[in-house]
Length: 459
Ligand code: CO
Image (spheres, rainbow, N blue to C red):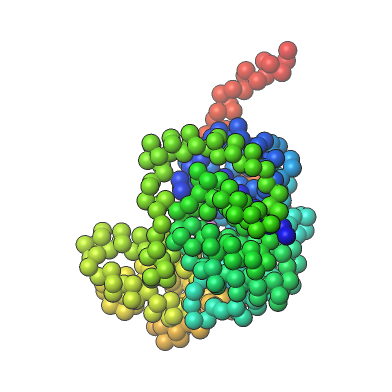
């Protein structure tokens, strides 16, 4: 029996616990140890890391990836990709998606975990195709949520659709940490039996279910689980690598992990964790077990957003009404999974319905959703609501990206000398403001050092 581990300290744990503020310099010294620890893969890129590099850390995200790749020749590097949304919240045209995926693989990514917030497989098709064409391994991803229309059958259907695209693996992604041990067992069992692909399971320790959930998922046949080295584990991050390694080895599973390496990795990150606590970057609140998500069946991030919105409007006494309204809004929208950006959109609408009257105001994001710009709703959208909001405006039946014109050439022309390579152009397409500021700083710095460089070259 075998179970493999994906280590998340560089991406999801970093993102969930310290808002993705870990600079390359903080983990450079441990990369060679991470490389020999025996992980299935090292999740180290994508998600919010790209944005954070440009916006807060003054790092070129591509260069970070190349440096990790250089230091980790033996371990697969993994990234998280939001399908047609790449690393952002809007849909990008196909030429940008294809080039982004191709360059990610060229710069060192081996495994792409590709998902769509609505589980609309049309929104992952192009990214999956480009990744397979580049020779990468693709984890076709199923976003896990609780709703009257999401059941084993619907998840298996999504799994089969992803398999048809040629993905080598599936991933069940529980962003909110609400998947229970029982549900995990049944879902993994069904997917393994009905789809028959290797399967990774991803959850968060937020509600305290995660250790139990992974154990049952592994018993049901999961092949890979996502964990974080212990001092960056727990709370809104993943459960601890060493703990699951310990428990599963006792059951006779081969994990392939080197316990000495794990000890060194944990010892390495401990002082950095202490610094994060000291500076306030690591807030003890995110480390706590938060079971409200189980009571209200909404993710923890969404709940805290609702509380802060209502507090700001001095209407915290309406929280129960808003929580009761959330399922109604979700039903009207055809039960979108409550993951970013849908969790924010549903939360804002439920608040507005309670404070100002049912759909008296509707955000432009919800309007776009009702027009079909985010993809196909998982269930039936309330047609009366759609008519009320859109009037006679047509509803999109095709993929939204089919309506977008190519972006790469235009971005390249716009940047001119600021862009040295396709990677720079892609940074700009993904995060125009942050990337342009970053590339401008880089160009200015280069101009400053230019005479010095020439001198040395002439020697
Ligand atoms: Co996650």
